[in-house]
Length: 348
Image 1 (cartoon, rainbow, N blue to C red):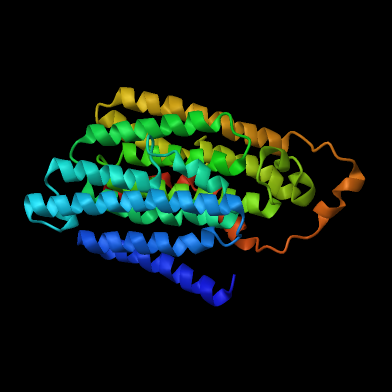
Image 2: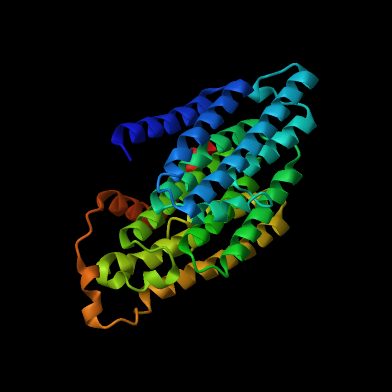
């Protein structure tokens, strides 16, 4: 893609998210979301592959539906209460509609089925943008709306953690596994959103770091399915030994970074007398952990059935930048000791 066009599209992506972040009026927020969608569509369809075009079409239709629903809900809110302000939502009908519209936009279960299909049709770089940057604007709105009926958010959160764990079990394609992983993580964020918004932001930050690392690892190895992971020992032995730890951090095992948000969320849910919800969420985390372990096993404990002569092309030096990967891997593995600092910040 032409670098001028690419920089314009990336600028559009950034501007759309910034407008949504900064807006207090529903029309401006909607406009930012639309700019976001329109800026990423050429990036998704740039390879002119039938799968990419199909994924782009599915994404466009889903996001257009979400945006139309959001616009309808905010107009209904203005009609019922005379308010266009995001912070001043008081009527339960528009609040519920907006929550569902934003859930569709980020891919929360049961409105999630577009996400694995779309992610599977994209290359890893665009998939990374879709899994990280594109979640920010709808999440900013969800945090501002703060639905009063906590039952809806808890139901969406539990359904997402369950679907995210269950859906990934049978997959062999890495991008679909990452999509289900994303759904499960979003479920955890939504579970605790009404009780501790700052904890939701902390979870979102750790999710962004861990997902960024995982996508970069797969991009460096050019892996798109589980079998391709078995060849990574020849390309980057040091990275191959660290990747299982990155995956286990995504699964939320101590003493890795991914344990911190899960630990704090379970603690917060228990404080709110939601011990059953906390137990169910912890059990669904085991489902996700199973497919992360499967990936770790494929990468670190199996070898590709090739003879040595066939390994020569894998030994070519990669031309990709490894500095971002090194920084994000360090953050994915070693931030757990900062938990007291995070807790102190959350208490402010």
